[in-house]
Structure formats: C-alpha cells, structure tokens
Length: 303
Image 1 (cartoon, rainbow, N blue to C red):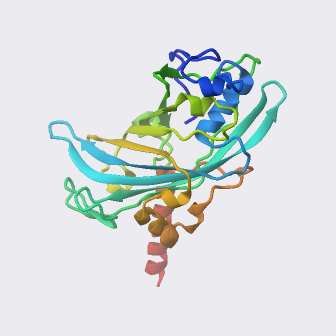
Image 2 (cartoon, rainbow, N blue to C red; image 1 turned 30 degrees about the vertical axis):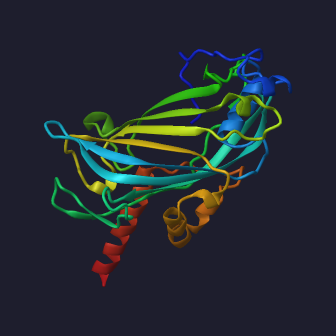
C-alpha cells in the first residue's frame, strides 16, 4: 500500500470547494511535503505514533484454468492491524514507517465456514488449508520528498466531495519454495496487487482529525496458493475483496475475532514500530510449515 501510479492526476488543492470545513482550518496541502506525509498517515494509520489501527475486509477467491469455466473456490475474511512511527532522514525530512501483521481466512464458498481441509477438484487430493498469517507485513519509510529532495505529492482524484487513490503493485521475485536454478527453469513468483481507496474529502483534508476512515477495494492476480499443491498445472487465482478502516478491533466479525483468539492471539496488536524483521509472505510462511513437516517425518522415521 505504499506506491501510487505516477499517471494519476492530482485534482484537489487548498482552494477546493468540496471541503469547506477543511478550508476554514487550513486544510492539509497534498502538494506539500508535510501535507503529503500527513495525508498518507491519515489513510494508512494515524497522525499519532504508536496508535493501533485495524483494517478489515471480505471477498471471494476464484480459479481460472485454460479451457474451463472460472471456479469460485473460497470466500475471504481478513484483517490487518498496524501502527506508525515517525522517522527522520537528512535529505527527505520527516516521514513515517508503518508496521503490521495480518490474518486472512479461507471460507467455504457456500456455508462460509472456516475451511480446515479442502478437496482439490483437479488433483482429487484432500489438503490442509493454510490460512494467511503474515507477521510482519511492514513498509519502507514514507516521506514527502524523494532522495533528491523533490516534493512527492499525495496523489488522488476528487469527485463530488469524495477522494480516490489507486495503487497498482506488480510483484516479481524469486519464489522461496523454489530451488537455486529458477533463473534457468522458471519458478519466479509473479502477481499483481491492486488497491483502491476512497472516502469523504473533508475528513481527509481536515487537520483536526488524526485519521481518515476510507473504504478500500483489493484485487490480487496470482499463482496457485502453495498449500493447494497444484505443482505446475496451468491456471491462476484472482481475489476480489472490499473493506474499510475500522473504529476499533471489536468491529471485526465475530468469527474472525474468535479464530484470532484461539489460533493467532498475538494478532490483536501490531508489531513494535522499530520491528526489524523481514516480511512474511504466504510463500515464506508455507516454507516454514513444509520444513516443520519434513523434520517431524524425519524424527518419526528415526524412531
């Protein structure tokens, strides 16, 4: 959630007539370095350091295989708990760093029950469902200036008193589950994340408010989930979900809160703002599980 499409046009400024309340209180300026940082913080966390913030979302996941109709495989139920801390840079000035952890559950597409095992219709195998439990999911520091000191504005569109921001994040990196020869035989992880945020313009620009509460949509185009054990079968997954920043953790659905309490209790709070760990992904998380299974099998064989 930290990159904007450079082709977006900034259509809102201090003189906008769509936010009279903000205008009366020196509305935050998206074209200034300071305003850019503040607006980013209001959307993604809070202007207050070390203040936990929760996003929640729901959606669906589909499979696409050449020559077949798309299949609705799972429903989705997820959350991300985060906080921000102020950081300083000699050239780029004052910015912030966001730290978070997140859970997303795969649900039965009909009953909406949390899946524990899934019958793979392509392989005929029943596999254990590995839900998303990524800790941490942290961002690089965000500043209102680039490395050369140029202002990086907060880019958004404005329409009828609503602001909108769009992010497209292409992913292309070495798959942690692959071997050392991916350069020669393939296996690189290839996906795209698309985020669209929107909310009331006056709320966003009002300097008296520490946070904005936007609605967010999320689309992901990706390879098969590793726990599906699809190997090299042709096809892909696509995810479509919507959510919002919540007023409190208690606004998450009860099923998600119950699962976190029983299985992921540390996910009720974000990591510390100085968290220096490497980010977790579905692939690195799955690798830990596979490695643990292999160790357990080896120990069993030894006995």
